[in-house]
Amino acid sequence: MYNRRDLLRWGAAATAGLAATLVPARATAASPLRPAPAPPPVDEAAWRALGRALGPGADLYRPHGNAYTRLSTPWNLRYADVLPAGVVACATSADVQAALRWATAHGMPLAARSGGHNYAGYSTTTGLLISLRRIDGVRARDRRLLVGGGATNSDVYRARASGLYFPGGRCPGVGVAGLALGGGLGFNDRRWGLTCDRMVETEVVLADGSLVRASEREHADLWWACRGGAGGNFGINTSFVFDAVPVTDQTATVFDLTIDPRHAVAVMDAVQEILQQDRAGRFDCRIGFSRSGTDPASITLLGQYLGTEATTRHLLAPLLNLAPSRRFIEQRQFWSAQDYLMMRPERTAMISHSLMPGRWLPDRTVRTIAEAVTDWQPGGSGTGGYVTLFAMGGRVGDVAPRETAFAHRDATFVIDIGAEWTPATPRETARRLRRQAGAVYRRLRTELDTSSAYVNFPDPTLSDWARAYYGDNYQRLVRIKHRYDPDGVFRYGQSIGSSNR
Ligand SMILES: Cc1cc2nc3c(=O)[nH]c(=O)nc-3n(C[C@H](O)[C@H](O)[C@H](O)COP(=O)(O)OP(=O)(O)OC[C@H]3O[C@@H](n4cnc5c(N)ncnc54)[C@H](O)[C@@H]3O)c2cc1C
Image (cartoon, rainbow, N blue to C red):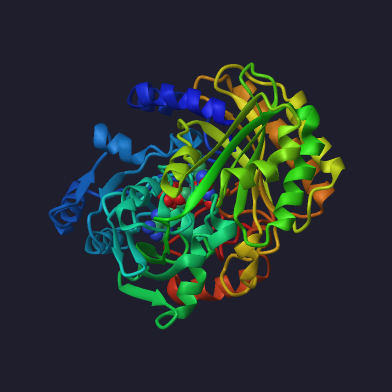
């Protein structure tokens, strides 16, 4: 996704100025693709009734005010103009049920939100925003972690005293719900599977307001769909149980190298060789080609090896010979390594296209990526373009494509091709950045001969999204959708079963 150097830089600015940037951002962020429809008129008495239906830990926020702004601003500021008529900050499943029943009774569109990090703004609505952020508990039971439907990666990391871990993402603010429901990749999936592969149970508030448990034994079709079928499709998940891994005695060596893009082919040759040899999935990484602001293009190799520094240095020797301008390799305890790998990006406006090739990248394609990023025309401060490759394989590929809703088990990488800009970036510059990302995407799609895409990096411009995200699993997902949400209460631009495909 992003160049780590930039993230650190922008992250620092964000910490200082996030609260201040939110309100002006609404006025200036590039608008979403289509104007959002206005919600039906609902009188004040009805809103008051909603407030009374909630439990003591929940709140209803109407437009304006700090809490409303904080809860309603999505991570991708491109969609910050889509303002909800009301936000319910739920504290329990019963609050979620009350909010959902109220919305359906009043014909009010709704969206659930956990971490709010959806790339395409699919947790925004002009109707009722149902926030689960207060349902953020994480506790251990035997070898399992019980996680609230609004917990984020950072909540899971805070519960590290249990010594238990399940593979998650690496951005503190990303919601476990959105992450797990769409798959969930990070620096541990090659060893322990995707986040969704570890989900053994989930509680879901369905479209009719009922609360059900989905697992191997109960509502097994819904459980299947919740493992890769993406959030916002079948109901609102208020809790999860994950099969966890004890990590107290686990060592991890982190590496963070920055290399000149003229060595791109050598870098990719070395990394692809390591990944092919690493059958145990101990090595995991992301390779970031990026160009941002006025910085020159660079390649960043960031990741970890679940083993010693000596072995890691041996594996990375061909890369260390390329004279990296940054070379950081350090053996740490597992949690300390995860802390290093966490990224803390500022909210930006952005677009992403993704590809999931079922083959290794040929030299020609690597050159295409390096040239595209080197030739990228930056748009000034806070803007950039990137092609990031997240290593897949290992345990991810041990699961059959139809065993869960996450179909693309043979992918070597998730390739994220994107551009980002700030609310202050002129519209024409933002358009140019988007055009550049689109051109790189189309070229890679042709060269790699695939349209498979990662549903957790949703792309509103994708016309064949049903096949791209879900492959052969799509029709089964449509049948499950009809069973659990026959009236399409959960709906967005690319929701399962929608006509827009
Ligand atoms: C900075 C950044 C870093 C990222 N890093 C990673 C990464 O390391 N690995 C990775 O795999 N992905 C990553 N992603 C992508 C991320 O997995 C998806 O954006 C994911 O959907 C975010 O989940 P969320 O809960 O934060 O999002 P939200 O925007 O809250 O929700 C996403 C979707 O799920 C629905 N939803 C939310 N909560 C619920 C719920 N409780 N029940 C049912 N539906 C719900 C929403 O309505 C929406 O459709 C990253 C994204 C960003 C912006």
